[in-house]
Every structure is written in structure tokens, then in C-alpha cells.
Image 1 (spheres, one colour):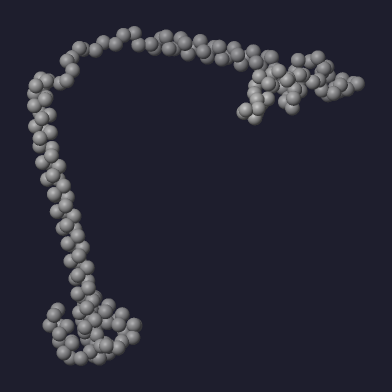
Image 2 (cartoon, one colour; image 1 turned 90 degrees about the vertical axis):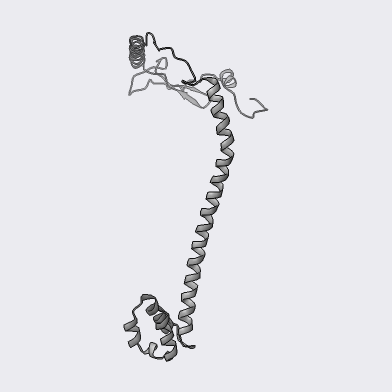
Length: 196
């Protein structure tokens, strides 16, 4: 046992293995009729039981594996690529080296300008989006304040919700017939209809 790794190595197992025969019985096993010298008899060794394979099955398995290997080798030899033929061509395309370097220099000079223009365009688009969002929020607050100014000072939350939904849905005929709307003062009514 290796004290540094604190576990048993394979070499230790090999050195310590000793075959222990199963407890001998006075009479041979009645069911199979096998003796202790039978090669198929399991062997016990340090807590492990080794059961030898059946020789006939093992021979068949080895034979099929060898046949498969031979088939694979024949197939690879039959399908092996014999030669590869490629037309020779010059690398680097159809441009000369001077033309390529000139093109790279012009691209490098204009790349800074292109990058700056792209950043400015992105900044402009971002500002437009922010302005649209801000304008939308302002419009919502303005409509809320207009509705609030038209309502009487003391209303229950249910009545307040009813009137605000009427204003939002633009259902003025139903609103004008409602008793909550009649509670509004005439100047507030006219102011609302005048604004609309």
C-alpha cells in the first residue's frame, strides 16, 4: 500500500493475491457433477471472485472479431484514395501586392472616419428614442392632469375610476348622461369639451 496516495495500487494487489479454494465438501456437487479441478470453477482471491469464461464462446467471439478486422482492412485498402490531382494556381488572388497594399492603406485611413460617423449615427438614434419616450410620458401626465382638473375635489375611488375611463374611451354621450358627470360644474364641462 502506498502511504503517500493512501490507496492500494495494482502491483500491490498482484503481489498479495493468493488463490483460495472454496471450502471443500466431502461429496462432489450433486447438481452439476463438476469437480474442484474443473477450469470453469470460480476462484476466490482477496474479496474478488474470478469466473473464467467458457472456452467455446470465447473462441467464437475471437474468430468473429478477427473476421471483422480483416473485412475492415480489405475495405480500407479497396477505398483508399490513390492520388490527388489539383490544378496549380497562384495564391493571393488576381491583384498585385502593390495594389493590395494601396487598398489596405485607403481602408485604414477611411476606417477612423467611418467609425466616427457610425458612432454619431448611433448616438443620434439613441437620443431620438429617448425624446420619443419622454414625449410619450409627458403626454400621459398631461392627460392625467387634465382629467384631474375636471373632476370634483372629493370623489370616491370607484367614481374616479368610472369618470377617468369615460374620458379615456371618448364615450361622451354616456358620460354626459351619467350623474357623476352632472356633478361637474358647467365651466369645467365646457372647458373639457372646448379642449377636445
